[in-house]
Image (cartoon, rainbow, N blue to C red; front, top):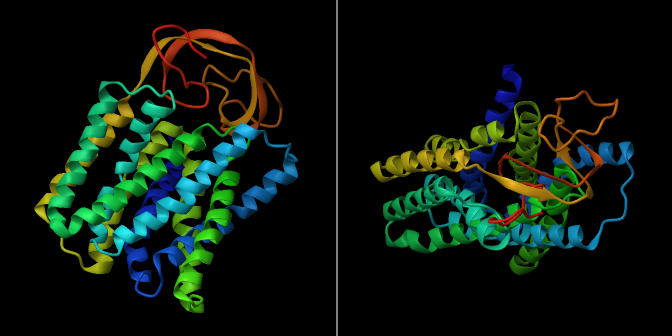
Length: 349
């Protein structure tokens, strides 16, 4: 296996991890709404070249109502509410603790997917979610009673991002970069305007540029690198690499903010690592039916669902374009994705 994609995945996780302690530093000069807005506008700017390139290759067709609503929900929960809640929690807790709390997003995505989005959550999934919750409780104990409110705020942020992840996973009319651009520019602009009106002044130029650069690198750049890694080594392996982000957050919190690690944080990190491993093992298999559909998303030609042919992209590489699926009924191990959102007990679409 080539090491380039692995390095891209690790750097993606490191960039996202360092965002937490650096954001805590920037909060000394910005309100939570202002910083959230600048970070997401920066992310939108970072992926703009990929959006322009995509538009030149394939003109955008009209977006259907379902995809528009899903994108709107992703912008509202993931772009507007989530980052603001996170930064309010970060303002009054250690960055190291917030880094560990952030992996509640993994559990929130799984549980909310099971409850509201027809996801399967088997034994490994439930154990992983419980482990992530236990890790969060241990970190809260480390923070003491003063950490209860920040923990709740970060947990609410993770719930918002869990909803965002589930809505985004169902969007099949936009590429990941286009979705990121929409979240960044729309939600970022909304939060920036709210924050500026609330404090009555614009961010200082230096602080504003630093925040935009942080958003471009640690949000936009991280997303682009993750996609690059997933395209070469697969989404599952890419997610394993990205799951190291909280541990990079811990490391940079100790290095940049001189926060001292505690025994409870170390135990929580170990529990979190085990929880991630359990969540990533979650698979199930049953006979299921796929209806005919035409959509667009990143895919490979060796995943049992994309047998269409074309000349511009070699088989085996991940790429994105509009394509159709014939109706098919089959059985194979699978995870919740665009093609597998169904209940169980009988074949379902």
